[in-house]
Amino acid sequence: MKEKAIEYFKNGYSCSESVIKAASEEGLCPKEFLSIATSFSGGMSSGCLCGTVAAAQLINGYHFGRENVNGNEIQARENAKKIVDEFKDRNKLTCCRVLSGGLEGIAKKERCSKYVADICEIIEEMIKVKA
Image (cartoon, rainbow, N blue to C red):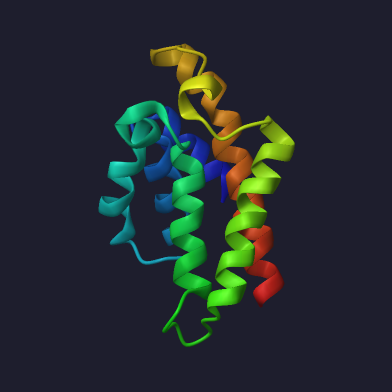
């Protein structure tokens, strides 16, 4: 999944869109989530929460959220914390503005590709534990 996501990211999709597009192709979420993920781009266009983390939370909620066949709101919330904690363990924080270092264009894509890869690994592991 992470290779696909990085490829999408380097070829025009935002970080959040790339994660969702790759996840949907792996059957981890509906393809319709792609349009939702657009609003997560660039820290929700405010530089706040990294779009990859927001995308992972969307996938988490899809799998573990309330009213899902396999849903368990406690599990969804525990997973939400695990996503953030693991991302922070790898990258120290979740702030898009700081993570991207004020870079633009290709330089930003190069730096942020790591965050796309990290979140794919985190969410894939979480979903595998469920299976």
